Amino acid sequence: MASPSILWLRRDLRLADQAALLAACAAGPVIPVYILDDETPRHRRMGAASRWWLHHSLASLAAALEARGSRLILRRGACDAVLAQLAEETGAREVHALHHYEPWWRNAERAVARRLTLHLHHGNYLAPPGTVLTGSGSPFKIYTPFWRALCERMPPAPPLPAPRVIPAPAAWPASERLEEWRLLPTQPDWAGGFRAEWQPGEAGAQDRLAAFAGRAARYEQRRNLPAVEGTSRLSAHLHFGEISPATIWHAVADAGGSVQTFLGEIGWRDYAQNVILQLPDYGSRNAREAYDTFPWRTGEAAEADLAAWQQGRTGYPIVDAGMRQLWATGWMHNRVRMIAASFLIKHLLIDWRRGEEWFWDTLVDADYGSNAVNWQWSAGTGVDSNMFVRIMAPLSQSEKFDAAAYIRTWVPQLAHLSDAEIHDPALPVRGYPRKLIAHTEGRARALTAHGSLKG
Image (cartoon, rainbow, N blue to C red; front, side, top):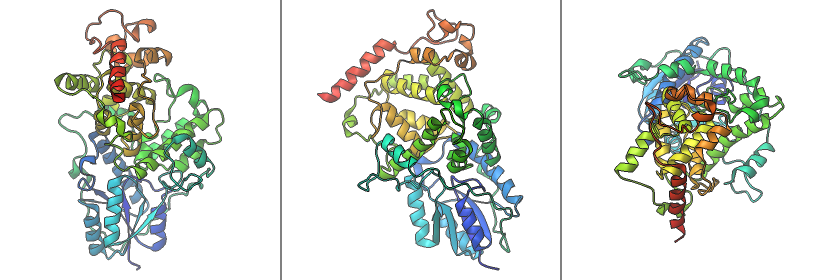
């Protein structure tokens, strides 16, 4: 029997349209491996919500592999050391994996390549990050021209089916038990809302795609309405690689209507990876250096306001509804994410990095590129971003996007209010906090702070 190959899995937890898996199968026996590596990412280790998702995604993948005559081997430690040890145990000579673009994964790939023969394949994005270039051959920094150039290369290649059988090695290496990793919360178990909302794994991703395909043509009309199921809710499945973007593209591209707007959101995901490929520290450093001297609020009052924002106690119903939805389900409607982020940055004058850190821990779709790019867009600090002086008015945004039913779901203290009252209650409501700051006051304070940069 030929020497086995190792399939190194990270954020690509699927069998369909999995180029690394197909290449490994073509070479002979395959040992699929997932390594829980908290050493390589350091402070970017997965947050609690992502770890919950990972547990269930790995369980789903293990079952799918077993149905094809294979197994999922689980190990912990630094990827390069663990893979080298596995190669020594099994006689494997080659490792197959999909490219990843987070700075810590690029470092890990270089470390693995120094010790083993590493074959990297594409497949987690519409086009390989770093390959969509301007006419002069440089990478794009602005989304709109990037998207136009990406569209010229679309559609992506049709997705490839999962192999029916995955060749097994003569002997399997030892595996840790998933339960030993303690990825799930226990004391307390805060994941009840997660279990009700999500089905992690490849089958769950396909179910979400099937449900969305029928309404993809109305995406533009419905995506900004938090009370309506208008978005795809595929973000976490995409982040963990349970479905490929090519699969989604080919499933909905011909839906008509405003589906092109949705495809542009898939393109934004590609764009974010191109940004972090150029600027690896985008999650912690302002792209616009002028903001390095911005007078963010610090101290006890700012920390108290940050905690109120995190807990959905700002006194702004649309913001509080979003933050409570995030805590309960690990996800927040995209329009509300924008409103909540803008409120933290501009009304509360709290550094965007504090919000990015909170989302990193609490989102099931916490993606380094997308999270960093979206927060810097909101803060006006990014290479392509909203101007800081464009300050969202959360009360009018709530009314504009008909969020009354959404607020009733997540802020039950306000459920008795009429549609006209619920966006901005005129009188105090028992059990609901007063505003941390009035909109006009917060706006004026933000503009004054921004004005200090010009001095």
